[in-house]
Image 1 (cartoon, rainbow, N blue to C red):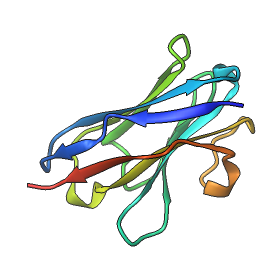
Image 2: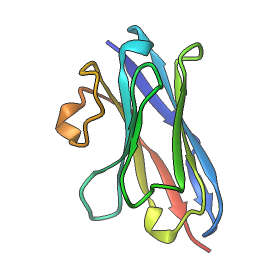
Image 3: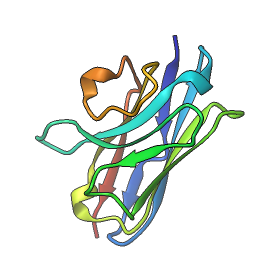
Image 4: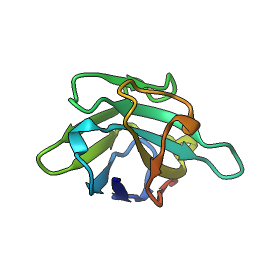
Length: 124
């Protein structure tokens, strides 16, 4: 089983950038599809984007397309979420999640392994 730990959250001004990391331990990392979800205050957890185990395929929610980029370094067992042009509505707890299903799924229920989350606050 893989264990996931997010880091890199914090407070950033609108228009700024932040990079989150999702570090994995246990399991064969390159086999895991990894996705990022977020949960804004008082709202449901939502899909942000994902990347396949090989890193060759990515998928993004419309709300972040063109602003966020997901990448991975399987040698370092880490997935990254680069967030640019941040908006106040990006404020949320961000989670990384993994599964062994191969394709990138957008439902939270399709992911078996979760990190503890990291807070991102976009405010002036």
